[in-house]
Length: 350
Ligand code: 5AD
Ligand code: FES
Image 1 (cartoon, helix red, strand yellow):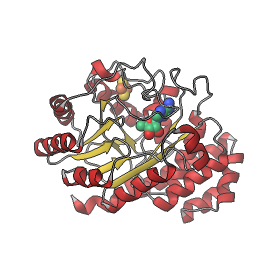
Image 2: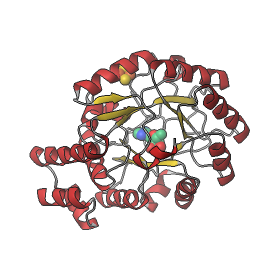
Image 3: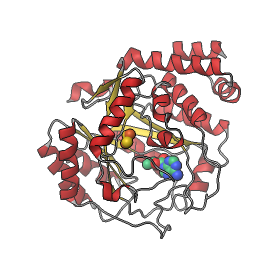
Image 4: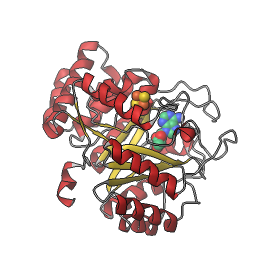
């Protein structure tokens, strides 16, 4: 087991059968600790002790899609839907800026209300008020023209998790969506010079270790600047209600393997990890993650953005999360970096 981890550390690669063997067989707490320590050591060679902070603004929970795992899927009629208008988004950014954030992540469902014209207006306004900040969008699949317009307006980065690299599993989870189109969107975003983010969920129903090896292989070949990995957490108002969901430990293994395969990636310690385990986010940092995304959304909409059940921080003010997470990062032995936190390859651009 340790030989494999050492080879992975030294070469940033392994064969598929070796990755599968690691996933199938790594069990002892000593081997797990060894893997996590190597992942943190690798992260340190590129990012030292820094953990980058991003302010997350969940600006719409309307969604035209029907992903079978997601709590805000279109068919869930129990969701209290909301949209933040331009002023509300700008005031979140203003508050975030005062708290020190220099990256804003605007995330939402696939909401047709946000046309290119509306989004361009919002992005331009944020950029003119905060020219030293990076803007990340996470609003799903759009046309190439749309991605061009959003980039020209000032968007720097785009998160679009591939969700799973297994075509069969992808299709079983995403009614009326196309596996190929999702990947095509990622390639288009890359071609347009966005810093791109892909990623997947761990513990999806029927997901095998072979599927997870496909995720790792896909990420290795795409080498996105950002990689979001979190446990799948079931939501009662979805067709997957009652499913088992992913575990913290398995997610940590995948985070660590991803750190070793794509050493310079920006890897968030996700809210989903903090939801499954009160120390889940610290554990993720100690397995190679180097980004946290505290919530900046107004408290009155927080609990309406419920992708999965029992999501943490839904009652907390932005300033509270900022303090809380800073304390957690420091206690875990890392330091908070409030800069834009660009990927090493993009540092020259800003
Ligand atoms: N559990 C965990 N993660 C989820 N996501 C959506 N629904 C769930 C869930 N039930 C993730 C998806 C999406 C990201 C914004 O949140 O991977 O891309
Ligand atoms: Fe929100 Fe800790 S990060 S309360």
